[in-house]
Image (cartoon, rainbow, N blue to C red):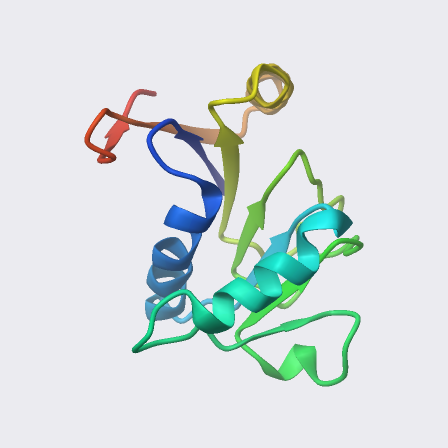
Length: 147
């Protein structure tokens, strides 16, 4: 499994997550988005309306039939089994990453706490020999691979 860290500088998670989810679906992967409980309803609502001409089919794992949709939102998931991609927001973790191809860790560059927490995660993963990539936004909002 690959870990890709996205260090957001010029955008918010809401500004970049839909595009990354679209690319994930194009690869044929189901996606799990793990985020803090306080953000769950807002993200759920946002993904249905983020663009006038589109929406991302998704469900919350605390609601019926979420497992039938290509994107699952969760504040409590302990396993990512059945998902090809996992997105970790706000310091979230998923202990069981069985079957996951890629894990995307979203870093809020405006929060020093977020940056420090994810540096620790990077270091821990590196020590285990995980395959890591680090992308940082430039001033124009484009992604530059830094590591």
